Image (cartoon, helix red, strand yellow):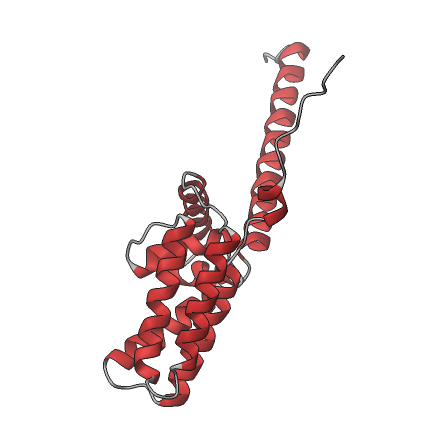
Length: 197
């Protein structure tokens, strides 16, 4: 009976141990990645898992969103632009009593204008919501709720209270998206070179 030399048994043992270590490392990395995505996307993670039917598909989608948004040039607003948007929102809100359905449509338009000014592309709604979820995961559900009510309003199926809720949902997103560049940074003069006598 041929017995394998001791050297081959040791090599096989080392290979098995290395494969087990590699597998443990791989599963550890997957677990860390899942935890990172859950933390970053919050409830959007769970919504995406439910929509796509599993964690693996959802995580691929969320990572694709991150890569897509990384390529965008998302910019904060200058203080003057932020003030203009805030004034527009206040004017819009003041018209709610007289025209609730019109104000919901105007709120949607103002949010889109703000997103465009910040650098988000204006694709279909699901694409916009997906892009927003990368940097604003806690408010994307408000955007989805507002859009659902706005769609019902267009069909004449939303009452005034629902329209009010839509405006509130849009406002939450609007406030979160209204990031302003620090005015102090803009006001700082260029560093002057010392003058030597």
